[in-house]
Image (cartoon, rainbow, N blue to C red; front, side, top):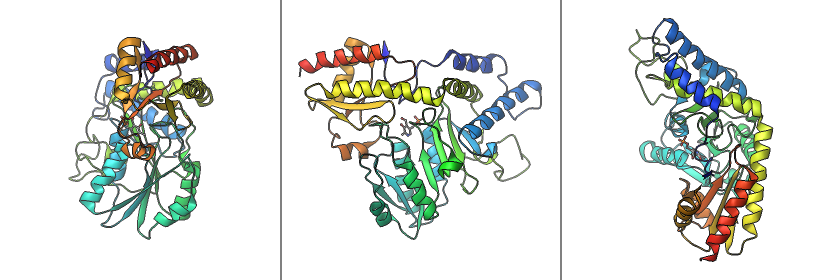
Length: 377
Ligand SMILES: Cc1ncc(COP(=O)(O)O)c(C=O)c1O
């Protein structure tokens, strides 16, 4: 079986991750922060270590501002729904956002009366006039995905960050497709809020996502409850991470994420990116040479999207799965505005995405399968 859906979740997980999850379940499966006995402390130590390593890896000075959630979607919801918007406040974002950004924004439009401007990014370029035109006196947040999960295109993050800083507007970055592939330093890159999943390129298990909250940002919690600290208080504690982490956290998921992060560090971001880009470029160019196939984007990360002669993308994905045992993702990839811009809303696109364990031979097998399928249409 060939697995080409790493943009959705990386698979298989490294043995170090499997072992770390298993150890958390078998060796110290107590409730972190809820007991002062050795097992609970061991769990709490692993969690604190993970906060520290993540803070250091992503350029945030205070590890207590590393908050764990069950996925990137929940981390993004916390950042957006928890943002202290007033009626008629305004947000600038892009047409490449995942529904995990777009839907909480649209919920704020309905529930809080904010306005959202979606900027069309083309070829990863920043056009100052578009952003200046969108800017309002009450623009309170800019939110952008680092790379499109449809086309693999990088957004012009440096220019967007400079624009945000110039106008004193906090910047939220959805690093779902880049955390664990590209170097991201919040302080150096002017990022105020950074959200990412633990289960994609950081190689952790499913059920873990992270939000890093810069020193200058104040958010309201979305969930209230027991935090294992400040129990005497009637109200949710103000201290982080407790303010945003009510209830028992996912200790096995966090332990797995720590192991995944260490594997990434050992392999190095440079080697990971080089390998994934080589596969993506190879795939991109080979697909481009086949008559009747349209390839989209420019594979800045290990993601390539294409269509075959206007055929529904689900049909092709089903054939790939059932006849060739190749797993790819079809459809709109939870990013309908990107498909609207690419004019692929009706058929969707077939998306292949690569991980460190994929090989050039697998790409060749895939291309042979596509050539064969293409003959029948
Ligand atoms: C760009 C982007 N944002 C957000 C998400 C949501 O991630 P999760 O499934 O961890 O909630 C994804 C997942 O595909 C994504 O690609």
